[in-house]
Amino acid sequence: MMKKACASVMALGVSVQLSACSPVGMAMGAGATLGVAAAQEGGVRQAATDAKIRLAIHDLWFSHNVDMYRYLDMTVKEGRVLVTGTVPNPDMRVDAIRLAWQAADVAQVINEINVDKNAGVKAYLKDTWITSRLKTVLTLDKHVQSINYTVDTVNGTVYLMGVAQDAGERNRVVDHARNMSHVENVVSYVRLRSETPDNLRTASAY
Image (cartoon, rainbow, N blue to C red; front, side, top):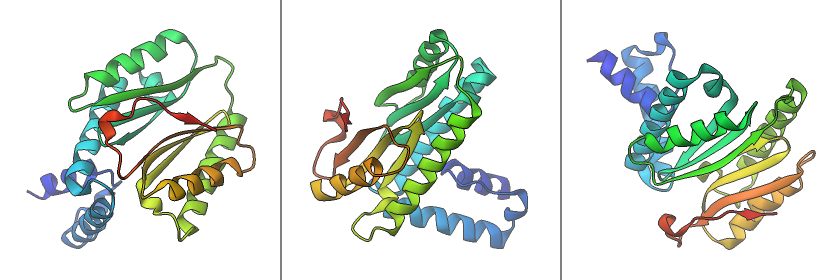
């Protein structure tokens, strides 16, 4: 019973250490996870579905090619899967998207994978810095509900996904990304709260 509870917490995207699977640790971890999920658009049920999709795709990638699992990143929101990263050849990009579609409950797969056999550590570190810095800026902006956004950066291009309360909030998030040092391009998959996810098929580039 205890193992099942730990698994449920991890399925919602929480990295739980073994020591945390104690009654106290589980209660704190589960409470924090449910609190975050409840605050997001879609609530706990949607967060659980998205986490299930993420785990399924990671398993498919890992089973197919360990390098694919290492090279690629993924964001899942409302069944929409954004795949980013850089792979050494086009075949791996095709396989990654094909496998992503095989996971249950996937509504859309957005392919933003780059192909570059010469991708290096320096670029990766710069992308990581951009992502981390932008997340901090969004968190500190009292006019942005940062919990509803995810940020991915690949080769200086920032990919935004999430739900904005209104056009003004979405513009603030995009502007923060555009004004970040070392950012070369911003691609937004952010939808307005009043919009229907099923109607979104294209991104906005800035």
